[in-house]
Image (cartoon, rainbow, N blue to C red; front, side, top):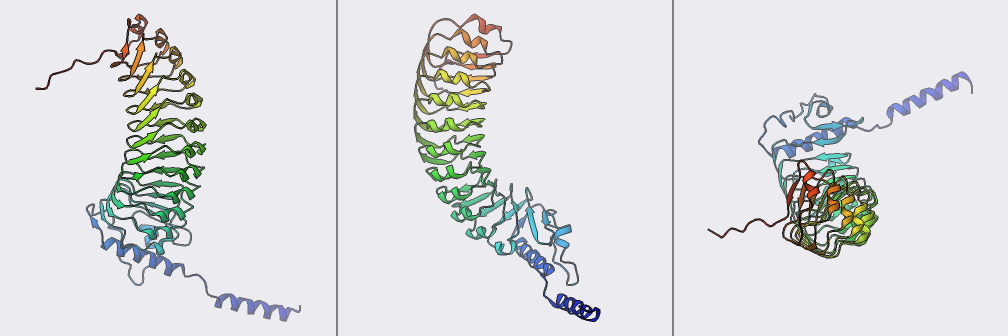
Length: 383
């Protein structure tokens, strides 16, 4: 190619490049900003300073203003809103006036500790890039939108301490990237969907303080990354599935205040990482399995207010890390095993309201700060 032809080719290429349309990031950012301003107008703001920086943009202003000076707003390199964090901002209102279509680049949406109410709109599914969603400690009501199950980028979902009702959507099982699912302290009812067992990356599941019923799904035993399983204070029934013993990384197992029945599976002795085991206030029966001696890291074990019978296992004395042991209000019989004196870190021992007999081992008196309750408290006549 001659130098003149090369010069002509280069000039033509430059002209084409200049004339080609380029993405109008400024226009997109301005549209997103106006979307937030429209939402702000619908809100009652008790903390007047929280959104004071959210001001209408003058015609000649830079569209990057929301990215650089608006409270709680973080943008990506293209100037599009990427994170919205309005935690504890004194806001009251709904999500009806915000367009999720104009926030499709959002990866974090945090409204924790405000006073938002009303339903969570199904249009939230449009936030397909969202990784972190926290609407906890508000007054949201209605159902959890099944559409959230299509937000497959989600890793953290916090909806606890609201007034959400109806059942947990089985569609949430499609969130295989989810690390944390926290729905406690709502009004959720129905059963725990077995599809939760598909959340292979889940390490924290908190469904406590709801109105959930039915059995604990066997499929929860597939959640090999789980470190916390908290389903306290529901009306769950049936037996404790032995599949829970597959959760080798589990630290906290809270099944208390339900209607669970049957024995404690001996397989739970395989949970070597367990530090806190609570099954109190159920309908559990049978003997306390001696396999629990294998829980060498266990610090708290609460088995009170059940129907356990038989002897207190001698092997429990091998739990050297235990600080609290509550066996009150059962049908346990026999003597207090001398081996309990081997629990060098024990601080509280509750054995009252059983059928125990014989003396209290003198060796338990060697503990400097052990609180022992072996006899039921005195009954007081109503005044």
